[in-house]
Image (tube, rainbow, N blue to C red; front, side, top):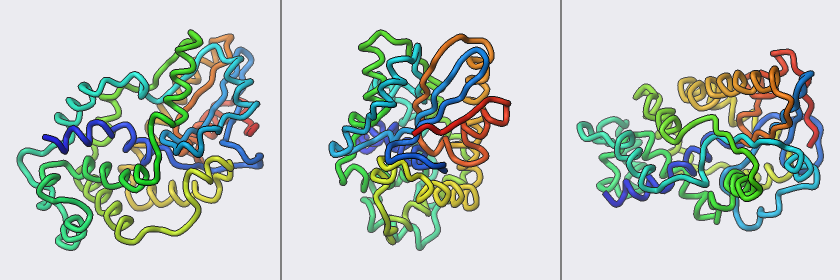
Length: 293
């Protein structure tokens, strides 16, 4: 089960790469995107993260972000990446990422099976579900470029908050995140893997994701990434972005309506995109929303 251990160790990173890309923007300086949401009782800052970063991107924190962090009485994250137990992640992958009855190659079109043979050792991954194989293949180029979860904004700020004894809150558990993929219709899983295989076979040219995130110029990549997922694989879009954003907006609505607090939300930047993004959803609930970085 060596391949399961490898995938288990990378579950959070794989999810991050899929769901933590770049979003729509407004006018702002060259820095990762940050919004403020205000009610009569509280204010919540929304920061779009990139979950895995290279060492070259380690200095992403700006004076404004640090000021917001210092004021924040609590920090929110998608899940507890920093405190994840490798054994627990491995168990989740063994439960949700393996199909003991039908081989991966039986679910794919013959042309995609051939592409998969060139991308990986088919014998070692043929027992995986399509979503698990897609995670492995989609993250390989990112890892090869030097990106690490340990260097990502989420882990860095979770550790910083805990070190400063600031309350830390999570929208989801690791099992919740595993279910995001495991509960997809099989056709959506297969489509996800097929798209990853085609991207591996024909890499897209353009600016690295990390640099666009650092620059805060989210309009260059966000609409294309989100729009493509929404159009080509709506079940994946609804599971990874739309439904989660709606659930998170409902949680933050409670904080804004009842709390006398300043809180800082750190979630993947794709969650800030378009009409289904957190800024738009909270604005639709009647709050003042402004991008400040």
